[in-house]
Structures are given as structure tokens and as C-alpha cells.
Length: 162
Image 1 (cartoon, rainbow, N blue to C red):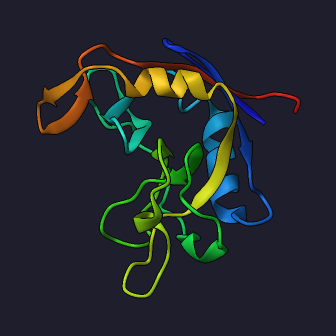
Image 2: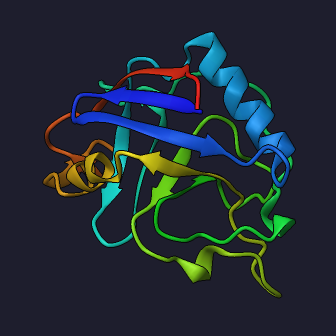
């Protein structure tokens, strides 16, 4: 279990290490290194998702590790409260950034013609905190859109007992 302490409150995440071993190992590496500490939720789209894990409050990219294999074929669905690896248009490009689905986003699942986004965990407790993050006002900041006008910081992400 991973506990995220944010400027909006705390939530806990259960990881699916059996179904998404590569994504979970990658995510835990970032957690154990303290990589997420001080990063922000830099993209928030109400009714869709909140994304974080790769940018600092001044919108600078934090250098992560090499990209990982996309595990979107693992059978897990992008349902409300699940975490998935963010990526570019390149299928195997996920590094540290992740997103939390605010609704069921079936169009992000693996299917013919759409490789999809790998789900690797779900919110176990604190979904109301994620919903509070989703409710912040957003705007443009530099080259980024849908950026919270009130910075939402990940203060820490740590392993905790289930």
C-alpha cells in the first residue's frame, strides 16, 4: 500500500503487482527514491482524470528513469479510482507520470486499434481527496493546459502497511 500526502489531504493506493508487475516495480522504485516528493498534480480535468508524478511546482520536468513496457494488455480497466501510467503517443514511453481516473474511462483501455494505458493500482481510501484535487480551478501555464491555479503538491509518497 502507498500513502500519498498531498496539500489537499491523504489517500492510499493498492497496487496490482500480479497483473502489472513492470508498472508496479517501476512505480515502487520512484516511491522508494522519494522521487514524487515535491512534485505536483500538473494536469487536472474534471470528469476525466488528474495527472502527476513528473513536474515540480515551477513546471520543470523531473528527470526519471528509462521508459517501461506498456502493460495495458493486463485486463485491468480504466475505472473510477484506478491509477494508470501516463505516456506519450509512443506505446512504451511511460516513466514516472501517472493519472487517477475520476470516472470510468473505457476509451483508455486496450482494444483493437488502441493500445491503451496500463492500469496498475486503485485508490483504497481517500477518493474524496482525489475528488477535491479534481475540483480545483485550472488554467494555462507556459506550454501546459489544465494546470491547477492553486498548486496541488505531492508532499510525500511512502509504503505503508495495508
